[in-house]
Image: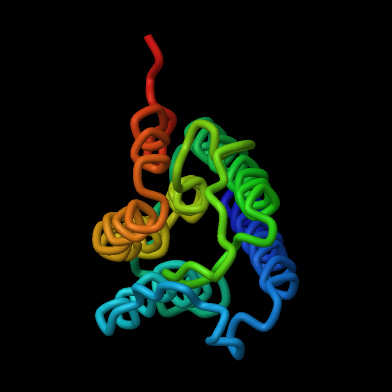
Length: 204
């Protein structure tokens, strides 16, 4: 019974995250058409298969688990108490992921770009959630991936997002930082020294 409740919690979280993303994409003015507004584009051919792999772990595999019986062979069942603890923690992490996903978009506002690019007039945002973390959207996805691991009691669907997203972020984050450093120079270098990449830097 609990596993069905947590499956539903995952689905609600997924829908909420998708709505957040769609809302902010809609507020980004014609980014897919107005290429003349792009000042620097660092997208590479390798990004597409890595993004498809991430979508596989984030969308395709969990939906196969939720709406078909193809992954039933990899299901597992935790004892009731352990299931309650894991699912509750997963739901709490997904809620945190949603809040962080919203704030990271809202704090960027007009500086948001869905691709690895900088638009003309882009400014460096160092306030809000960006005051502590340089890549809070990736942090939100990490929380989402951990929530999926805890909510979906399946050896394949649970860790799918976490496993599939690691290659993309390992390849993408250093290039994004290089792009920001080229664009903002010393200002970004100072910002990087006082912040963490995807988790806040410990301040002793």
